[in-house]
Length: 108
Image: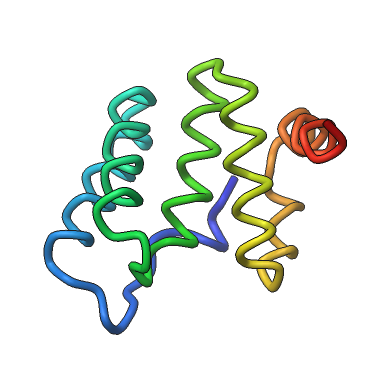
């Protein structure tokens, strides 16, 4: 899962935001979801306009979901698709339960 949309290099990435993202993504890969959430939250708070924002929101939603934080996962995924509608193709790689949670969250 997610093979087609793994971490990719982006122009304009600073050292600090890249470090935070990399640490969060690594924590996710190691199944340390709460740690991943912390890094992605810090990244998004400190660097709200980072070019890594799309990936940070996406992996944040995945980490929340894996950690059992369903409402936060749905909120993050909805925010991801609102801010990055061109990434709609990624839905095929997301757990169907999380997609349904996001649909319900949008309705509320």
